Image 1: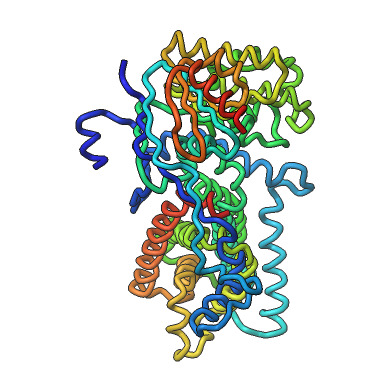
Image 2: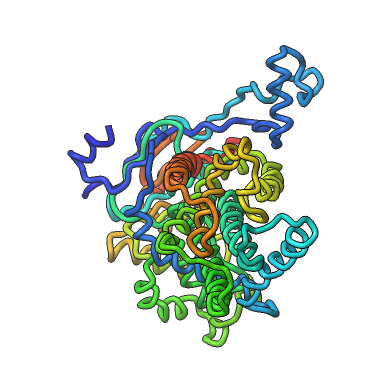
Length: 286
Length: 264
C-alpha cells in the first residue's frame, strides 16, 4: 500500500503501524552524522572531565588488572601463559575483554538511559549504540597504543614474542569485537527495557563469562573434551587469534575463527532487527 | 494548495494496568503457575492473573484529517482526549496501532522545551547538541548561532556558562530560541508556551506566525490557551475521548470547545 501511494503522490514520510525493517537505515544515519559526532564528543569528554588522571585513566584500569592477574593467576595459581611474557598475555586479554564488555553493557542500556530523550523527540535511535561503541573503541585504541609501546620494548630486548603475518588481520578482529559487543547489547536491550532486574544479571553474567573465555589462562590449558564448549563462545577465537598474531602462540584455526565471525554477523543482524522492532513500541512499555 | 499531512483512520491502543510484573522472575513464576493451572502467586487475592489479562484502552479512535501547506492547525480537547498521543505518533515517537499518516516535507517536533539539554554543558554546547537532536546540521547551526542568541535575549557572557546555573526563564528562552530557528516545513508543538513570561510567549507566537505566513510553514499546535490558539491558528480540530468530534475554522472549534467545557 505504501508503495502505491509513493507512486501517485510523493510523500516524504509514511507512518504505519508496522515497518518490517530488517536492516539499518544507513541513509538516515548519514543525515544525522553531526548529531553522532556531538554525542561521541560529549560522552568522551565527560568521561574524563573533572577526574584526576584524565585520559590516563583509560590505561590505569587494564594495567592494574594485569598486575592483579599476574599475581593471582600467574604466581599463586601458576596457570601459565604458553610461554608468553605475563604482562603482554594478561594485558591483551583484559584489553579485548573490557572493549567487549563495556560496549555490551552500554548498548543494552540504550533505552533505559535515554528514555526521557527518546520520549520527546525523534532521531534515529541507532545513533546511541553507535556512539557508545565508538567511545569504547577510542578507549580501546588508547590501551592498544600503550600495548604497542610495551610490545616494542619486549621485541627490542629480545624476549620470546613472535609476531606473525596474522598481525595484518587485527583490524578485522577489532571490528568483530565491536560488532559482537554491540550486537549482543542491542539484542538484549529490548529485554532490559521490560525487565529491569535483567541489567544486574547482565553485569553478573559478564563477570562469569570472562572466566569462561581464555582471558586469564590460555586455551591450551583446557582439556580437549571441554574445548568445544569454549569454541562456541565467539570471543574465545578472537582473543586466541589476537594473541597468536602478536605473540606467536595461541589457537589459529581459520575455520574455527570463520565460524565465530559468521555467528557474530548473525548476532549483529538479529540485534538490529530486535532493536528496530523495539524502538517503535518501547516508549509504551518502559 | 496541496495536502502536506494526511492522517487516515488513526487508532492507538494502550494496554492498561501493570504490563507484566516488572521483573523477569515474577513473570516466569506467573507463567509456570498458569501452565500448571494454579493460581498466579503475584495476582491480587480474588483478582485475575496479571500476565494473561488483556485490558485495553483506545487513546485514539479512527482519527482522520488533512492539513494543507501553510495552514496553522490548533488541536484542542480536554485532558486525556488524545492530543499528546496524536502528536507522539506524528513525531514518530510511538507507532500507531492502525491507520496511517503521510507527510510531505521535513518535520520538526517540539513536545518539550529543552529536550536533550545537558546540565553540565554550556549554553553554546547545548545549542549545538539540541539543534542536532532536533535534526539540524552543524553548518546550519553555525550560520544561525548569533540569531539564536539574540532571540533568546541572553547576555553574551552567559552563553559559555553551564546551563545548570541558568535561571529557569533563561533556560526556556534559549531552548525555544533553538527550536524557533529550525528549518522545517512542518512544525509540531505541544503546549510549549506554558513556560516563559507573557512577553516571551507573544514573541514565540509571533515567530511561528511569521514563519508560516512568509515561508509557507505548516504548524500543528496543541494548547489549552484558547486566546493563543485563536491568535495563531487558522484551522482547528476538537478531540474528545480519542475521537475527532469536529474540524473547522479555529473560531468555530474554540466556541465548540468552550461549550463542551461549560457542559461538564
